[in-house]
Image 1 (cartoon, rainbow, N blue to C red):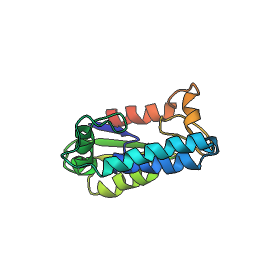
Image 2 (image 1 turned 30 degrees about the vertical axis):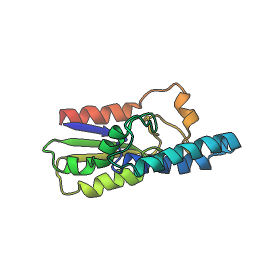
Image 3 (image 1 turned 60 degrees about the vertical axis):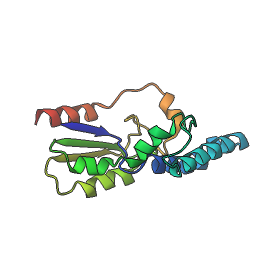
Image 4 (image 1 turned 135 degrees about the vertical axis):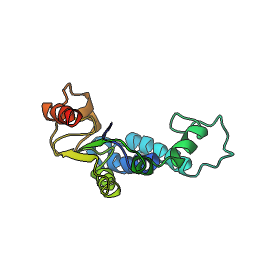
Length: 161
């Protein structure tokens, strides 16, 4: 079987662009310096979306070369999952701003006709499957914590079914 935890169902570049929107809206990123950094990252992401197969192979965008990004842009994880004959468990934190409930809902609608797929979301969890309150921010990732027992129990129950 396969377990997908906070797995994007949309293009990684589209998801990252959405993350930039979210991060730019946070008070912790209100400074001109933070906004400039986020705008630079957004520009790189837009360049990735416009890559051509003949792009300069030495050009680094978001820390990777064009071949990597072209491969990522061509990959369709939903279609791949639809064609699998494996049991699939898809878990999602509802406070996740990196891979949002939009992705989870797309997994659900795209795999609705497969009887071997289980979907579970957790209202209080973020992208790292850690508990928090309110809007999730990057700073909460630095708070020491543990995966809640509920998540571990759900995974164990799914494996043992």
